[in-house]
Structure formats: C-alpha cells, structure tokens
Image 1 (cartoon, one colour):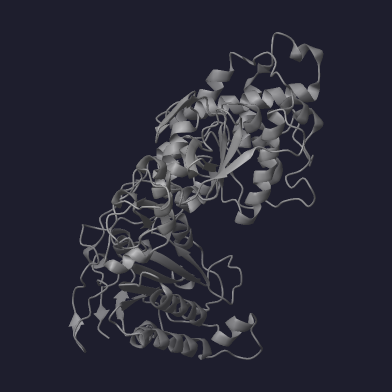
Image 2 (cartoon, helix red, strand yellow):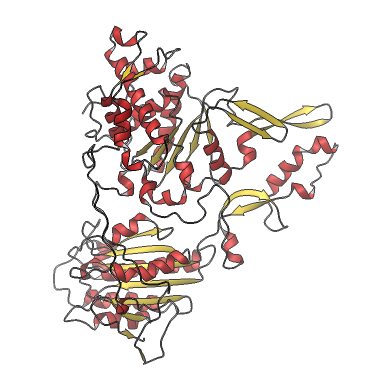
Length: 634
C-alpha cells in the first residue's frame, strides 16, 4: 500500500487510518471552508501527536517555515467566556500594578491563523460550545465584552475529539459545525518524526504557495453527484453537501499538484469532477466497501407486537414480597405501558454509530439538555454537589467559593474603584464553582450469553433499562460466555454513563460462546458495586443488580483468575464458586441494593437460578415470553 494517496487512490480500500487522517488534515489546512475537524474514538495518547501534525500543516499554509506551527488554544470543561474573548495583561504603572484587557485567543484578527484543540467535545463547557457554534464556518465574527469590541474574519481551525457513545450528549447544532469527521479508533502512530506518515513534496508545495492560484472549477456533474450521495439526509441542511464539495475541491488541488502538468495551473483553474466527490465520500467513510454509492432502500420496520401481560410483570427495585409468600403478579419498574423491545443490533456496515461520518443520525431521540445552555440540575440531596469542577459562575451563596477566580475578578476593577494599596472584594466579584452532578443510582447487568440460545431476551431487559433511563442511572454491564470474548474463561465488563450507550445494545445482541465463567462475572459485579458504594464521590442512593442466567457455571473462579483450565473434571466447582460470589453480594444488605435473577427455565436444572437468588437475597423472575411469570420471594 502506498504511503500517500495518489490520484487513483480508492479510499474505500485504504486501510491505513493514519494516511486517511493525514489526507483529511491536509484538506482542512488547504481549504478555508473546512474549519473544523472532528475525530471519533481517537486514543487519548495520540492527541498530542495529531495536534502537532495539524499545527505544522497550518503553519505551512500560513507561510511559516517547516516545523513551525501556529498558536494553540485548548478548551475543556472549565473554560469560561473570559478565557475565550479576553486576555488580561498585568503591568507596572505609575500607581502600582495595573490590569489591561486585550483580545483573547479566539479573536484572531491580529494574531493570524491558530488552532483550537478540544480533547473531549462532550465535556466542553457551555461557553466553549457557544464559541464553536459562533466561529466555525462563519464569515465574520463580532465580540463585545468588558469594554472590548472587535470584528474579524475567523481563520482558526478546530480539532475536536469525541467518543462515539458520547454523541448523544452533544448538541446537533455543534456537531453540524464540523465539516470533516473521521472515525479513527484503531489508528497507530508511526515511529519517527512523521507520526502520520511523510508529507508528499507536492502537497507541501501546495500548502506553501503564497497565492492559491485560480479558483477551482466545478464540473456540471459535481452538484448532482453530491446531492445523490446525501439524498437520505436531505433534512439536515446544506452544511454536509458543502463540506463534501469542499473536500472534493481540496483533493482536486492535490491531484493537480501531483500531476504537475502545465495545463492544470492555467487561468482555467483546477477542475473538480464527480470522481473527486466519490473519493471525498470514501475519505470520510461515506462510501465504503460495506456501504456502496447507491444505498438500497431500507424496508420499514415491522410493527412491534403487543407484549403479553405475563412479560409486563417485573419487580420494582424496592419490591420484596413477604417471607415465604408468593406473589401472582409483579410490580412493574416503570408503569408507563407495554415495554418496547430493543431488537437486534444492525450488522457491521449498516448504519451503526461507529461506521457513519455523522453518527448523530443514529442515536434516536435526544434527551433533554442538548441545547446550548446550562442544563437543569437534578439533585437527590446535597451529596450530588460533590461532583467534578466543570466551570466557574457568579456565586449565589458563600458555599464552595472559587478564591482564585474571585481575586481575578476583583483585580480587573481595581483601578476603576480607586484601590491603591489593597485589594477589595465586592459582593459582585464573588465566584463559585460549577460542579457536574454525578449519578446517584446504578444498574448492574450480569448477562449470561450461553442461556439464550432458544429464546429472545430483549423484552426482559426493557423494564430495567427504562428504570435506569428515567432515574438517570449509570449502567455497568458484565458479559459471561459471549462469542468473541477477549478470554473465554473470563467475564468482560464495561461501564456506561447512561442507557443510551450503543455498547449496551451490542452486548445484548452478542452470540453465545462455549465456556460460562459465571463465578467470575458475579465477582466482577460485586467489586463494581462495592466501588460504587464506597468510593463514589456523590454516594449511591440505590443500586439494582439483574442477573440473567440459568446458573450453570462450568468455569471455577480459580481457573478464571489463572486464565487456564487445569486437567480433571470440573463438577460443581463453577456452580459453588458462583453461589459463593453471590453470597458476598447478598451480604451487602438490601437497604440500597436490590437483586433480581431472571430464570430462562432451561431443563433439567431448573433450581439453580433459585439457589442463586437465595444467595443474593433477591427475587426470581421468569424469563421466557411463553413462560408463566412466577416470582419466588427470597
């Protein structure tokens, strides 16, 4: 595979993520309209190298010598308006120390092109989001703040990173401002001074030209081809078609530089063809080997059948029947009508969030708080205010003050107030911390993939996931016996911020494997619950543990820890270890922890789920849709 794309390069077959990323960064540096680059699932350890490469490319485009970059500004969760538009300066004057205000890092009217880096777009502060919406793709920008008035043409480039599962947390207005989007989850840097590969000499010459030359001419077939490729997103505005056409125009200029023919650099300009549009679509993975240019029409989804009454009966987290009694009907977790099944996950190559350049199209309805304003805080007590600091605001009380920001606010008006030998803090100068509320509820799912070969279990999880969604609970998934696990003798687990994490649907659709390390899965679930209760800064108010298994653990806990199975028969060792791990969870008490075991009703060992529920001090729920919902009080 060539180290750099050429005119005949087909990006649908280009499997080198670093070469694709280098091409996208060159296009963004070359084309003024491509002001924002959004990278999905970029490993955090690669951000520094990618930022350095992009800064060097922008420096070349600004006429600087090779190796010299541009000014960089990093925005995070603690960024406020004063950090964006103002730059306070301290100097010694006739009356002592004086403060002056100059244009901030985002006001690039005098400093020239710059680079704005956002390490985590989902955790960017609200002032940073507003700045991105205002500047990205804008022809002019105006700021009036604290006596400063500036008007300029934005030339800064933005480089942002976001995880695919966090797309639902970001405003669609903000995502739409990034014309270049690329998913690079498996990108590996190259050793040496060129982590993304060597920059071709012809590309460097194009970036270093003082004058861009004649404008590119769009062929008559370019606009119809752009609209044809984006016909299924005609309700998203014109930003995406314009971005695709601009990427194609940048690729045409690179092709012209590689060919080096005299006829392409004349007054007629570079000609953009439909081939450049298709290559641009392949570059951002709009067209791949799994997604052809003409996508087939998707048949409408079948109507969801009514859920039987026996499947609507699920116990609430706090419901425990009387000792020794039986309840003919369970209490639903969230009584809002019949549950809607999650359904199977689309196969790779369809419209899964990780395979599209615009994953926000597949996340479904957006939750509240996606607008560009500070979301309403949902509290469950004063402990929620112990979250991480994400910003500073004007203080509303004397609790949790920000002393440094308060002193800076008072120092800005020192000369106006006539303070010479001391710093006086007025009530309007007080600033307090803004903290993100942490979830106070947690849903833990232990999923045994080897017990659902002959039945569909998606309806079982619906009430519990609805409870977690309504209460804004975090989710911890423990997978046991899944096909393709990292180690078949061990359980896999991951933590999700909410039920809208796409990894949850992928986990519930995984096919069963061979081994069943149930004891290791319960042990991991117990450790996760203890960490949440003991080390969670906000302190959990309630936790729900749901175990879906037939109780047949064929891997002892010691074998899972060693990673290998010694010779000899296993017998009931795996089952006994699973019951012991469940007993350790049950000893945590039922005040804050509620346990539910879903019994698939597999013959002949139908009593194992009940034994597991006994150890957990929880309840048993029938799992099969055709089975009777029998709940056994423990």
